[in-house]
Length: 88
Image 1 (tube, rainbow, N blue to C red):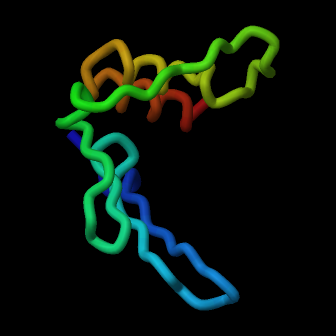
Image 2: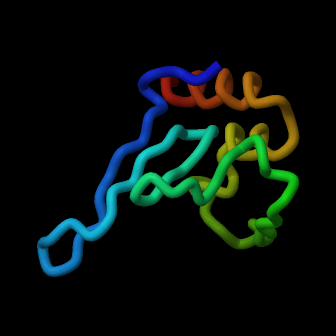
């Protein structure tokens, strides 16, 4: 279901020194120093309210169709929509 290019990796630095490593997947999970802080399989246990999008730019990330699909449709449909947007 998830593809290699959807892998996330990064670092949080303070004063130029790495203090945390971030790993994960676009729509699967997110770890900070190997501690899982978000997992799609547990999405029903947490609530992230979505702010209204009136008055925001068309390019606002909240208006991305793949993000909307992720909230309302199966993950594979959201993944397909993300790939469609990236290849426009």
